[in-house]
Amino acid sequence: MSIALILIDIQNDYFPGGTMELVGADRAAEQAAKLLGTFRLRDLPVIHIQHIAARAGATFFLPGTIGAEIHESVRPKQSEPVFQKHFPNSFRETPLLDHLHGEGISQLVIAGMMTHMCVDTTIRAATDLGFSCSLAHDACATKALSFDGVQVSAEQVQISYLAALNGLFAKVISVNDLIPDIQGTLE
Image (cartoon, rainbow, N blue to C red; front, side, top):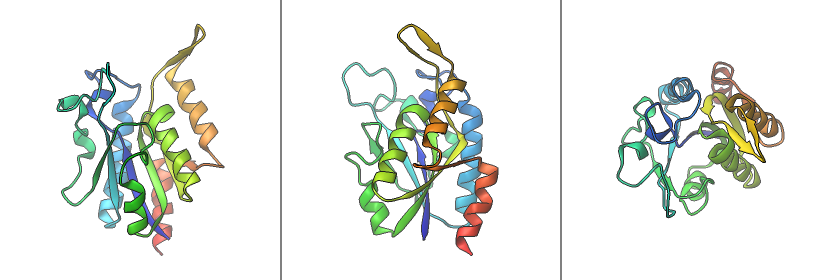
């Protein structure tokens, strides 16, 4: 079974000072960088996903802005593909699926931002497409939401989405617990 790391939308606009700041972005990026380092050390495939806003009225990830750039903590190497997307699903209208099939990859380790949007959508799509997924829960970040006058904290949004994904769609696990799993797949 071939394994790859997919880092979703770890971009400047999600960090302090960005136009769509997420709760815990810095901590999530630190953990994602740790996971990235493990994959690089073992010479395993890494794929970066970068969201570029294409819809009218968008306020973040605007083309050509610093906010749309991938954060320095997980900056891609020249050899690591970067696929740009315009929708929450990293597979929609991108070469991601063809790339994964071409490389013989069947197992995905996923980290990124926002948990409740692009991470969730991509994991569900990946599962539907037949991939086995692990989600590094501490290498993800999200934001508070509201519905019908009810405020939901970022922490509650995060835990709700992680709980919904765990089991059927992904093995939801910490970076520290995931790293030995990655080693085990190589032996």
